[in-house]
Length: 631
Image (cartoon, rainbow, N blue to C red):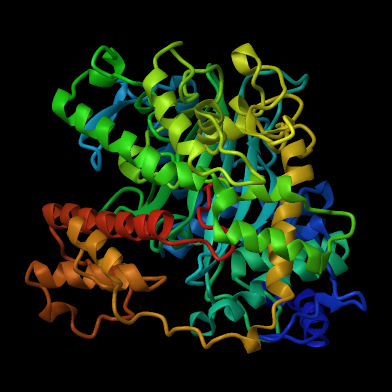
């Protein structure tokens, strides 16, 4: 078994972690100094990001894994196969191709629009025939000319919620193999962003120590040791920690939106004009035949339909096409109210409590070669928190079409005036209120398209810098959004795995600082964490009621899929047949369902997942940042 093959490396990691305090006390990766400041015992690389060829190109043979010895240990095929296996589905070559094909099919949009059911309107969506024409089999061929290559592994512990139901996201980035010689087109990247449930939810924050200390421990390893440990972590759930392992593999369909409140798969693509980003969840189809698992296209989170930032939509043919005018008007009015009441405070994070805590905490840590200043804290805390009814199904990062308030010129005069007033009201003695344009720049920066280009390059056309102004200071200096990779549009370059200045200089040091605060906290001294489950808070209960979900575990537990299936089966009169099936396979639970019943089950599960994700993304604060932006 793979677990046994990883045993020598993982045993070494257990020894390293066991030699220092584990569990709830101050971590052994944090050392108190005589000046009252603590020093972190882990480096930015590899403990926050791994992008070295020695790790990512390590082969199965080098790590002693089953399968083709020459294949990469982090190959695209291995990840797709692991997702299928986690759903107890066939994972052979044909099944893998069929699964990937569900994503490729989603790029076709003959009507040029897609329904946002939460909003009650169609929203424009581009037809992408070049992406749809990609070959699933070629993408899965690790040695082929058009294979997907692993580019980086990211530790996003900073996305953990204040409830500590999960320990953030842990990501794998893939990119289409670059042709020789390189060209500006034919670019396609996927990022698998797994939510990792807290392995000891009853311990609260302390339960995530086995995750954070795993990543911190990579800094004391050689690169092949790192590759072996990371392989075991992602595909087996092995941490090598004295307190135990994860509750399951990181690469599991449930962790990408199939069961839980966070996690997704995103694409950044340029097989044709324009550069664009999309998003999917991996969900069970409950079908008797065909793929057991599918990539389900969903809205791109924190990416409101850009036209909502305009003063009037009545003359916008793209938005009005096929829609009830009153529904568009109602959504637009709702958006404007939410923009001034909720989004502006989220975007003006300098006034938030957790921003202040992060700023105050800088004095207590010696961050060494990866310093963090107030600008990095600002860049790490700006968020939008957009409810899904406002979000569209694509985010375009080329040109100004998706930049709030930019196109057409003069279309957002009244909106800018409202934001002038809202921004001015949030000023302080040290940080002045910001004008409407600066707030619009922040709103652009926290979208996928903005972070990947349009906020990083503010010149006309958005091909050149500098970054957009996101704050005007008292002394007339400004803070600008940091840059993407020199070639544009990406934060990890496919050709050489180089990282963007935004990652190297701002985002990664900030994330290391956040994990350092966690590792340096004496969690024994805190209040006892609440037991998971229990009574559903009123705001969460309202979400369940509005979405027609009658399963309280959806709001309180990290896993609820089986409970939703049980509830649905009971509701169609199969309750007696399901007695004793708790813990049984989902295949056994759904055996004998008719096609309409399976369709009803898909709808029930989809509603539950949507409710859980709304509770997590909109109603739940982050452990360290109030509004956690998805990218």
